[in-house]
Structures are given as structure tokens and as C-alpha cells.
Amino acid sequence: AQSVTQLDSHVSVSEGTPVLLRCNYSSSYSPSLFWYVQHPNKGLQLLLKYTSAATLVKGINGFEAEFKKSETSFHLTKPSAHMSDAAEYFCVVSDRRAAGNKLTFGGGTRVLVKP
Amino acid sequence: DVKVTQSSRYLVKRTGEKVFLECVQDMDHENMFWYRQDPGLGLRLIYFSYDVKMKEKGDIPEGYSVSREKKERFSLILESASTNQTSMYLCASRLGVETQYFGPGTRLLVL
Figure (cartoon, helix red, strand yellow):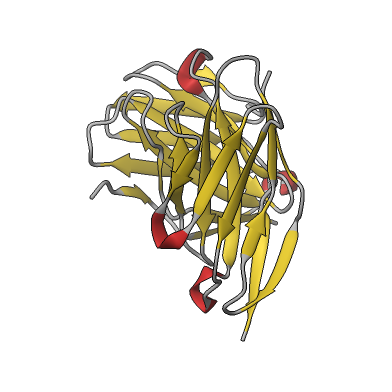
């Protein structure tokens, strides 16, 4: 079975400061990992994904995430937050060997950006 | 651009009503999914389909059924709506093991 834990349900940062969203996962096999973002009243958009290539993954809008197998973590970072980063972020794990290649979502982290 | 559309953004229904949520994708994806999203719980998989007329139960299928008569359309059915089915419902589609694309969601309120 696979699972995802997002360690913070809410994160508040000031504009221009770094953002760190923490994610730990468990998976029986070599997982694929994703970060999705959901802006208010919008669908989910893919930020980045890890699929067993480079462990440091760069995504859209200046976000990046590092896959650390020893720590079973896939934390999302951005060096400088922008007001438009205010949204909810979901860490997702996919077991490519499971039927239907199902995704398992974390509970989400809501990011507030203060001016 | 991949487009996943859902028939309604907001729905209000009464307890016991039969409810249909429709999802259409325009990229010939074989895999389609229905999730519900609740605060603090993330997205939970209700049903998925990997081909026309094929369906598989997800993690929380109770109280729901699905229909996939055409490749581009995947319908979620609440046979007899209940108040605990008040939620945001998200449809998604995917080609093979690639990225999933999500629709904008339908916010359902059951009174």
C-alpha cells in the first residue's frame, strides 16, 4: 500500500521569502511522485514530477523538489514566494505497478503569502 | 492543450435524488478517474476506467456508480444522494502512465 503525509496543513510566508512544503511518502515499489497546485476555484495543475531520473526536479513557476529515498521525502521549495503562489498544494505518489496506476494524494498544504 | 470539462460547476440536490455528474476529455485518453475532495483529506479515488465499458472501484466507491459508454465521456452517478456526499468532485484523464489532467470540479451540495 502507498500513502502520503503532508506535514503542514497551512504555511504562511511573506512575499519574497523562501517556501518549503514538506511531504513524506511510503510505497512498496519505486514510486513516481508529483506535486500539484490548486488555485481557488480552479482544477489541479501539475507543478512537477519525479519518475526515477534526476533526484532534483525542476517544475513550473520556479518550484523544485528533491527526492530523498533514504528519508522517503519529496519536499517542495521555492526560493522567493510571489503573491500568485497562494494556493493549495498536493503531494502525490503513484505506484506504477498497481492496477490502474492509481494516485494517492496527501491531505494538502494551503499556502498564504503575505505582502 | 488537454481539456477536461465537467458539466456543472455547482449543483444543489435534495436527499434521495439521483445525480449525474458528467466529464468529457478531448485528448483520446484511455484512463479516466473520479475523485472527491474534502478539506484535510486531499483527493480520494471513487472509481476509474481504463477503457470503454471498463470500470474499477477506487478507495471509496460506496454510494456511487459510473458509466463509460464512449471513450471521451465518464459519468459519475449518485443513485440516491445523501448529505454526506456533499463535496467537490473532480474528474481526471490520463494517457497510459503519464500525467493526469484534471477538470475544474463540480461542487455538489446535498440538502
